[in-house]
Image (cartoon, rainbow, N blue to C red; front, side, top):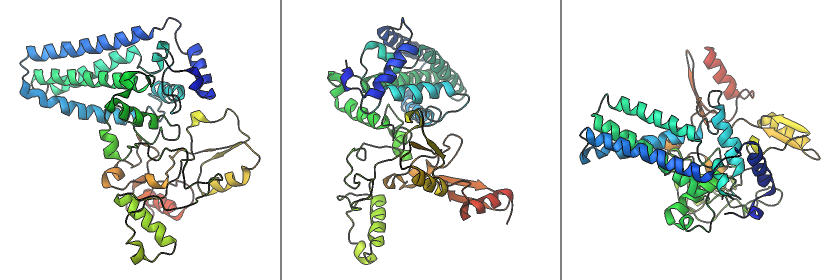
Length: 390
């Protein structure tokens, strides 16, 4: 198991609190793992047997990859939505995931220390029954438009995806000396999950655990290249030292670097010849609310023009926190493709989206959602459009 000495002090303190206040005294990690494997495996076997009894054939296997793609999208939306953004209906899910799991395991301390820590990794047994009921309900809907055997294969595939999620998530938190942790596929996926457990990135990247299909499509896949603690472009005061990074490819980096060169006084014709440049890199500055200090001298609400200036004036000599609803956007994180942009529209499922589309009676407004109610001309114009003013 992991050595307690390798766990940061704040994380170690939370783990001790979790074990004392949340973990049931009679909890058995081995029993929890056995229950998940037997219940999910039994459900898959029963669904497959039901499918064969109702005439399922090899040709009906097309439903399996389709189910996995749908499950991948559901996993992504649930993880990026209620698991990381609190809603009244699913507050317990948010508490368990963001306020407990992500404080129990941080990027600097991913492995569990004992079998009793499995409680902080695996879903509660009651959720297994919930997911099974959802799979059966969706299978009944599939049976309305497809043969019963195909619907049963859908249920088996959905339960298989859930089991794969639990197994892989467990492997991401095993100690590094376990042989299974060094398997190439597991090691790569575990590295993506470690990036997600960076408190600065957990609401921004790597929401798929099984395979990062939707992360790739939505532009939230982060392989960890920007997660290095020592950023050569930032000095000890946080000031930018050198805007140009080593060569890199990609249209987004090229366009960003072209803007840097032009702003620096390089003529556009000359700047266009410097195609192998990278965008400005900067380490994120924000942290989740769960990582905030227990007490502060000053709390500033909002990081817009007024809040940022106020925070800068009040920060010297004070313990200050700035609360911001939206996510932090580092220069290299902005969408660079249409698919990435479509994944960043503000909605009830994604309150801190980058873009906002507002429909008015006489005018529709598309605008960056970086500022709201801050008094900027674009915001005032969109408010008038929404109310029908011209």
